[in-house]
Every structure is written in C-alpha cells, then in structure tokens.
Length: 336
Ligand code: NAD
Ligand code: UFG
Image 1 (spheres, rainbow, N blue to C red):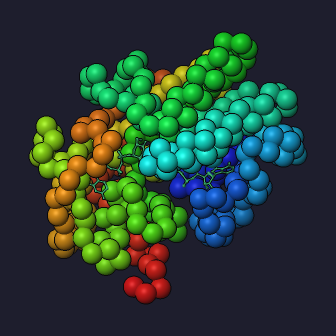
Image 2 (image 1 turned 135 degrees about the horizontal axis):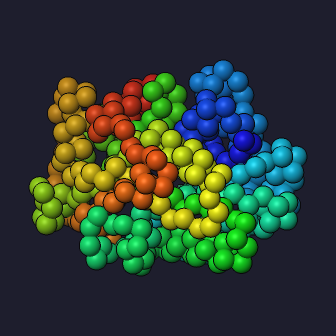
C-alpha cells in the first residue's frame, strides 16, 4: 500500500514510518516541521537504508494535500499531524482548534476530492476525561478536560458523521495512552526542546544531568503508592498498532474507536524505579504539589484492540526505559 503519513516526521509518525516501510509499504511523509526536525529524514534513511519521500506542507493547505494524494497515488492516510501540548491549548485554544480540527477537515476534504477513503486518526485517551470507571473501555463516556482533548473528540465526531454519510469510508480512531520509548537504533525518539512536560523525557534529562532533579507531582493520590498512575506504551508497539489498524480497515468499513495501551497501570515511582534499574543509579527526586488538571489514575481496557485488530503491546516497562535512555545517550546536547 502507499500510505501518506501527515505529521510523519514527528515522534509517533517517524516510528510508524519505520514499521510500515519495513513491512513493505510505501510511505510518504507530509509535515510542516512545526514540531519536528528535518534531520529526522536523514535518520530514517540510516535506519531504512533508503530515503522516504517528504512533502513540506501544512495540512491546512488542502490543494497541496490533494496534489500529494494524486501525485503519489496514495491508498490510505494516517493523520498524525497535530499540536499536543495540553497547557498551550488552554492558553491558546484557537491555535489548537485551527490546527487540529481545521487541519483534519482539510485532509478529509482532499481525500474526498481524490476518492481515498481509508483514514487512521491519532486520537487520545484524553477524550474520556474524568474516569467513571476503570479501565476505560471504548464505550466510556467522553468528556475531555481541556481544549486539546476537545479537538480530538471533535475530529472523532466529524469522522463518525462522515462514515454515516458514506459507508465506503474506513476509519479508525486510535486512542493512544502514554507513548514512551524509542526505536532500538537510538536514532529517533522523543526529543522535546527545553523543559519537557512529560514524565519519560523529563526522567531522561535528569539521568543525563541536563536537569537537576525530577519533581514528582503529588504523593497523596488514592493510588498504589500515592503517585499518579498511567498506561505507558512503547512507541514501537504503538507503531505496530497502526499497521494492524490498516490491515483491519482493508476488510472493514465504518468508524472504529480503539484504545491502544497495554492495560497495565504504572505509577510515577514504578516508572522511575524501572529507569533507575536500567541506568544502575538513583535519580534525584522530590515530591512537589499536584499538577493542576492531572487525573490520579487511568489506563486502558485493551480487549477491543486484541479482538478486532489482533494486536497487543509486547514490550515491557524495562524496554521502554532502556530505549528512552539509549536514545538520550545518543542525543545529548553538546554541553553534556
Ligand atoms: P509530534 O509533535 O512529535 O508530531 C506531530 C507532527 O505533526 C510534527 O512533526 C509536526 O511538525 C506535525 N504537524 C503539526 N501540525 C501540522 C500541520 N498543520 N501541518 C503539517 N504538519 C503538522 O507529536 P506525536 O507525539 O508524534 O503525536 C502525533 C499525534 O498523536 C498528534 O496528533 C498527537 O495529538 C497524538 N497523540 C500523541 C500523544 C503523545 O503523548 N505523544 C498521545 C495521544 C495522542
Ligand atoms: N509527572 C511527574 N513529573 C513530571 C511529569 C509528569 O510527576 O515532571 C507525572 C504526572 O503527574 C502524571 C504522570 O507523571 O501522573 C504522567 O504525566 P505525563 O505528563 O507524562 O502524561 P499525562 O498522562 O499527563 O499526559 C499525556 C500527554 C497528553 C495526553 C495524555 C493522554 O501529555 O497530551 O497523556 O494520552 F493527552
């Protein structure tokens, strides 16, 4: 298949590009590099032994997306392109609705014009909001707690309406839990600029000495050890999940929301301990106030992914920590 990956130069997209290419698919990346580096393309070339086609364009440029779909005779689109910083979405909601919702509509309009109807969407566990019960299954009520989450839910709804209007559409909304880890080569991974918001990149920067200590946001939650619990999933497992979703859609039309997680809930302290086990040293850490807006615990029910996609996560917490650390060691800032 020829697959267009919007946002394919980003963290999850680049790992998915590797998995799909190595499985024999032809991948074209479309990205405006607003949150990724062009050097990713060279790194993908080193991993794959061949370069991937890349179009430098904003997904909101519908004419350019249509042209790419036609020029490269694309069969399916995986739509990763989007902004993902929850805090920024609260400060600047219009930027998020414009990029994430308008951007998705633009890609769908281009697809409709060209007659391509297979679409995989990067959704998020954040669509569920405050847990009414756990683990979240796909029928759990949806009530996002911030504009970022609403952009994901709104696109899901648009996709649902689209599939009802034309039963030929084949749509999968993949609700990711907490992607972490990196490709085994250490060449691609998650490398946020400055001070990371997310736990794993923060831990990596403490381990490398780029940051002095880990601040653990809260130790008085009603959780296994008082710290927040999440469902961390290795980004390579997540990438495999996208290929499974495309395989599934080749035989199934309609709209399908599917959780991609491990089904395992891990506390901040458990993740830190696993990381310390990998690097054989203790990390400086301190308990601080809860982070506003954080949920205490959530994790995925993964039966639907297993039953419909025939996919389940295979990699361990140690694999996630080891690959994150390997990536960090290979990508230290010059001062380190
Ligand atoms: P990322 O920022 O690393 O990758 C997104 C890519 O999209 C970047 O390369 C960026 O340059 C590109 N992009 C953004 N807006 C664009 C636009 N208008 N036109 C063209 N390209 C654009 O993020 P990621 O972690 O790889 O996430 C991929 C998708 O998965 C996003 O939609 C994100 O919301 C979703 N998601 C991520 C997580 C997570 O924790 N990483 C969790 C749930 C869902
Ligand atoms: N945490 C710390 N210290 C840190 C960073 C995080 O203690 O420096 C804790 C948080 O309080 C939370 C856990 O580590 O308990 C995980 O936090 P992350 O920021 O790594 O992840 P979140 O679950 O808060 O959010 C992530 C993405 C969102 C996405 C959500 C659901 O950042 O974009 O997962 O997929 F919506």
